[in-house]
Amino acid sequence: MRVCVVGLGYCGLATAAGLCQIGHEVIGVDVDSEKVAALKRAEVMIHEPGVAAVLNEAGPSGRLRFSTDLTEALHAVQVCFLCVGTPSLPDGLADLRQVETAARAVGAAMNGELVVVNKSTVPVGTARRIRDLITQQTKERFAVISNPEFLREGQALNDVLHPERIVIGSSEEWAIKLLLRLYEPFNCPKFLMSPESAELAKYAANGFLAAKISFINEIAQICECVGANVLDVARVMGADSRIGPYFLEAGLGYGGSCFPKDTRALQGIAGQHHHDFSLLEAVIEVNARQRQRFARRVLEKLKASAGTRVAVWGLTFKAGTDDLRESAAVDVIKILAVAGLRIYAYDPTVKRPPPGPWWSDRVSVVAGPLEAVTEADALLLLTAWPEFHDIDFNEVKRRMKTPMIFDGRNFLADRQLEKFGFTYVGVGLGRVV
Ligand code: UGA
Image 1 (cartoon, rainbow, N blue to C red):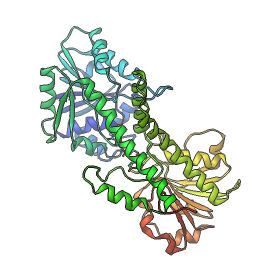
Image 2: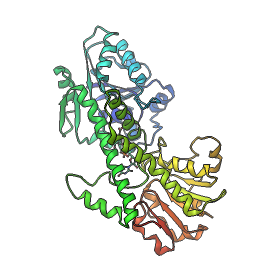
Image 3: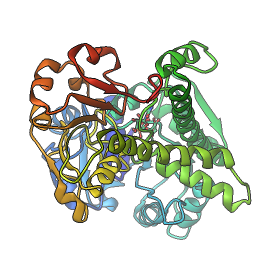
Image 4: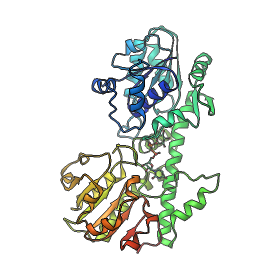
């Protein structure tokens, strides 16, 4: 099938690469001409494993092309995916301007029957809005389907190729049939429903995962009061198939471009309908508190004063990505830098300090984890990059001024760092004095 993907962020790019992998002919479109030029050279600007390899392999044969020209791109295309951004507005609701602009542009550019598939995470009712906008631009036959994505950054291509479920929100039989044909190689449950249910299902899934994280973080707080270990508690909870073991890792809480934005948007949707979603409000509040609490603990324990030198391992919102959006690590660093601490940070994918105001002068990004800890009064692990687990901690201790580790992800809990002479403080790992 000939397919067009509009919007080449991590979702659009992974979708384009994945659809190409399963045999479709794909053209990706973006308004950013620099990005498109780079993709034509098979240069991927984001950290998304496997995507560059698909570009290199499929590019020369023309099965995966890139363009800024939507009219040309839509020529003879049967399905057009919308994968544009839906950032937060100041009131938390989703900013739909990119979706609306893309819908109008597709309506104006389409030159034959077309199924428009929205993958962006959007408020309930957006599929209808997209349909109205396209109707204003064209007389051609078309249908709009809501088909939310469930991709994780850092493994987006893998998630496209191995979906756990596919959601198809539409009542247009011919369009549903076409999309089912496009997704035929995927052997997973395919749920057919109204566009409204599909749109809400995405927010509900992200909201629930965020709730699991905030719940275990609250349990971690109780663990510290009563002397219990959250890793043991989570293990027991996770062994219950009704709960499941995932998203029960206590730590600094969730960040990134999805959970924070989507929980706020869901809260906004509830508010628009005069529903007080107090459970979700607590999820968001617990998450914000978690990183502040961690930073406060570091300041108290260190009895930190201006110039105290702190090493930081990990800046991205999670391992496996170069994304700093709503990263808990960045928020922690900000609190410490504002308090006057000097920070030496290392992250495998970040080469310069996150842009910031005056306090960012106190943050340096260094080339390696051992360089970061040299002469440090404490080490903070803020993102669980696998390489941090197997570092030579004798060498770390030798380099540090004070052998103290604050682990915001409980990632080194099994390394028994006390045996190396460290003071080790995790999140929810027994009573904190
Ligand atoms: C998330 C969802 O997992 C995807 O299913 C969804 O498609 C995507 O959002 C989206 O809406 O586009 P992603 O933001 O890439 O994917 O990241 P996750 O792997 O879900 O992690 C989110 C945050 O939660 C990270 O900061 C991570 O460190 C944190 N987290 C995760 C925890 O603090 N504890 C956990 O147990 C799990």
